[in-house]
Length: 155
Image (cartoon, rainbow, N blue to C red; front, side):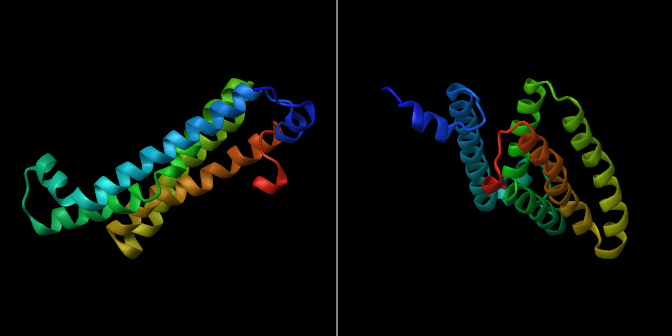
């Protein structure tokens, strides 16, 4: 199949190769599919899996672990996007932005857990990861925009 130059220019205003764009979308789609499958398994089988791993039948342990898995697995698409963006940026030669993002993750998890755990208990620990994922993806979005991979309309 031959793509006419006008369509090619519309699809790739940044000058990136068609192979990169196809692989970027393919990897993202596979990551999203994996996240959906994991979330479906967690939402249907979490108590059984927790009993299997821990060997415990205590309701509080099962309830707490199930809550942790459900909150985190519902948002697994965020770390999938983080991995794709971080690896892509390193491939472009930008090592600073992924390092900044990773630093945000480290400091953010500690701070969120430190400030939320005393206020809302273990749920503060549970939501620390998804909150940090949401924050640490911002510099990656900005970096991808800088390299011309994301346009204003995609953000």
